[in-house]
Length: 420
Ligand code: EPZ
Figure 1: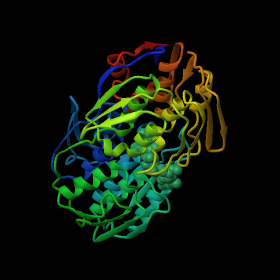
Figure 2: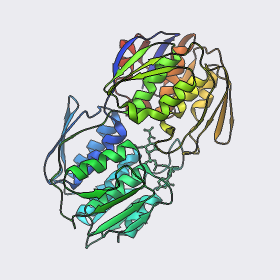
Figure 3: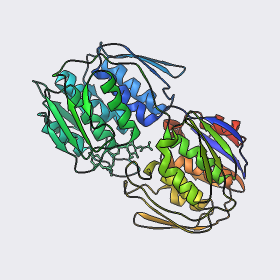
């Protein structure tokens, strides 16, 4: 197993290029299941989760090649409809094949994803929506069996809760259903918006994109002549590098980024005393003379993202005063707190609210990554800590950050990947 050794404190400078968004690319790969033509997708992030999903698509019979961030994918040869446990257990986003497979083939079997480090993360809303569209769902031996022999039919669906992959799954199912679907209380994340825009650009009658109510007229089971596309920049990777500038008291520039997707993150950095300068596709962070405390509540887009919570918790350890971070999306997304405490952070956890008293003096230590974003928070804290930090279990990082240590090293960080 690999781990990262980081020498702190470190100063960064220069420019970093942001990769394509993992969380946009995952549903877009499964979107290809609705296409009858081969697709070329550019700006594909080369991270472990993407490779896992491509393996799943290959198991279904698709042909996929990923090279130099270009994915060529052809799903016309798909002849299996089962997403098995071996893959789904390693990546919950595999559930994104449910809607497309069911809509295209009238049946599929997808392993239940099981537990997860950041919370319970049920898929009940995905399943309820498929039932509302006429599917019969049974759960047997750890698998969801979904059947709709005559195809799915359009429905009026009100999501009880806003769900990102739930919205994506149901939008994809509705695109091939018979008749019109009206989806209410949808996720408005840029990743969902891009999925809808590709369907629109491919000729699907879809309105309400980027709002909480999406209306789609399905093709009645016919696969789609889909356009090629480029994956949007990763707003969470970008936010993480903005935090890297802020926590190391450095000015750095991000290229190939969508500043408008980061408004809530930028607002919090500015409240903390940083200055963020933006052009159409670049962002430069100028650090604060002294970071100020901040109050954050994680919510659905366009509010502050839960996927930036851990990184801001790391940042808040250097801010003067009491910061409060209220995690509203996932009940267990504070596993990094005890690891940050090992580095010297003064954090009190009460239910879903973490209170950080700063500025703390951070010292290097051995710490363990517990999930993807928790891992990046530890790397950030390590760059601000005095001495050597070893971040273990970085396979979590590799799931979603492309070349993190190369990118940080190019900015001047003292970071190396070693074997346990
Ligand atoms: C997506 O997960 C992201 N994953 C997550 O990114 C992100 O943290 C999350 O959205 C919230 O922004 C991908 O895009 C692949 P949800 P998702 O369904 O879609 C509850 C990362 O670090 N819920 O929007 O699985 C759920 O438990 C990650 O890159 C139900 O109750 O999240 C949670 O409390 C991790 N029933 C809330 O809704 C359901 O059927 C939001 O979850 C579905 C969800």
